Length: 337
Image (cartoon, rainbow, N blue to C red; front, side, top):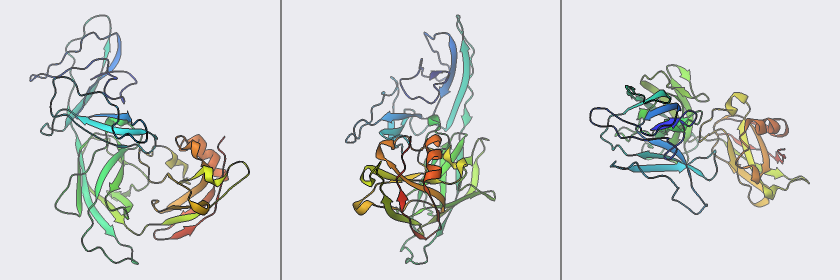
């Protein structure tokens, strides 16, 4: 893929040119205008996909390059971008080694030859799973099984969303084919469980993304899962300017450092609908210190902007959630200007 400078995170259809590589490693891009470009040789092509209406489950996307086989695509909702899905397309098949590469080239008015794109091995993130049980609940009959994804901290779409492989041992995990970058560890599996902590080499990465920028494998990462979830609930206090029925409740961390670089599926910036009696309930927040406010539902797509969070910081209510705690908090309606 040949991508104009500044377009490195865009998906299929955004390229200036594409080329297949022959058995000797040779490739040729034709009809290239002068400019600076990134040459991308990916395992997967990752992109945002417009999902269309709320009733559509078939996001719009360009087809695979001609002459390729074994094409497949996966997608999931990108929580921070309403109406958009994150898609990953693979047209190389599962038997290709996990190598990828990027290089920069500047094109003038004459042909450019002898360009070398060096492929580097992608890394593996692996470790063990520790289960922290809610002491007030009966233990599960069988060890729960969890899967993990790595969420690019700064939203770099080209990094993808690497997923863990299934293993016979429910206490270990392995995420292969990870490109160097910074990632949050996200969990999926039983809905009553969430990540309590992430530790690697004695450092806590619970509120800081894992730094896999060195290009070296990351082993012995310890992820603690718990079903001892906090609960935050209460009612919304309407104002003359905005009624609770027109609002949603939003929660975000007190620490400003966590207002940026939270990835595509943040766990500490949440929103909740308001039900009967102007009541709300949130069961998916980890323990921590938060600010809570009710805002106009029309701000659904932009409320996580740090400038908007700064407005809510002084007008919202501060709450502290401990593991297993049940907190009741009345929430004010705040107008984002």
